[in-house]
Image (cartoon, rainbow, N blue to C red):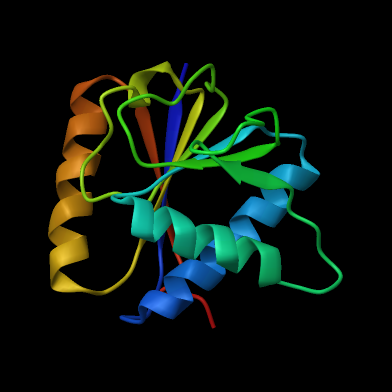
Length: 144
């Protein structure tokens, strides 16, 4: 059964959301997951691409964008309605749930304390539950 993880951060900062994304991707790669990062636009995909190349000097996060030729990297970043053959881990950074999200084993959403993002991700949470996918909350607002 598919599962969706909602990581609720205690920040309003977009940069903190992206930093958490990098840590999540690094952990998932270490666990041998194939990751598809879904973005809202090509510009956002390029931003994530640049960020993953520069995240940590000691960390290597091999990835490609869907606009590039090698889609066999452990991490692929895209923004269209086509995620190819990916079905392991979807990290959704887009404003909407992609039409293909139900084919993934795991879904991750990173929540920050921004009114627009909170509204969008509450809608994602309701849709995921409606579709019978187990939603798991990881609330970092309570962490010290």
